[in-house]
Length: 185
Image: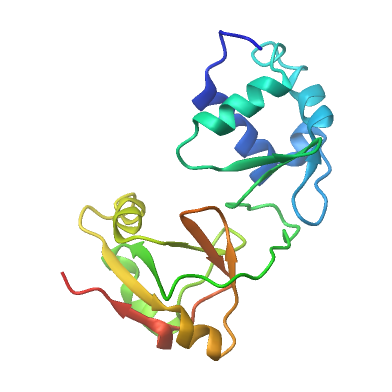
């Protein structure tokens, strides 16, 4: 393990490789987004910046990350959410908490009211378990974001599927507007 690794930067690079451009690293993701750790390390070792990265560094990167973007099982690694690769990453359906939240900009509200939430350039709609996280996400696009509340029990009863991203992020293919309500502040 190298002491000179910039773990936040490594996390961004691994995210880019596994979520957005695996072909640039000659990685072949399986249908669930997994790739062998050896294949990832071999690709990273082609770069002088990452030539000393080892499996232990990847484990430390995952452990230190607040957002829990990746996981390692056996000798494979994957990004948990946020994919924009053309191939749909298959997620296992799970039962979410009764309410999930989505932070968004005021400028998107009329479109969301009309069409619901869609994944845009990602594979899934990202939802938060708590209002604070949804607010932080929404602030990326709006200083004072709107927080939408999703009643997952009602949505699930009418056919909406939810998938676990990590302990704070839930995913859905889309959320029809009938299941969205603006949080009153």
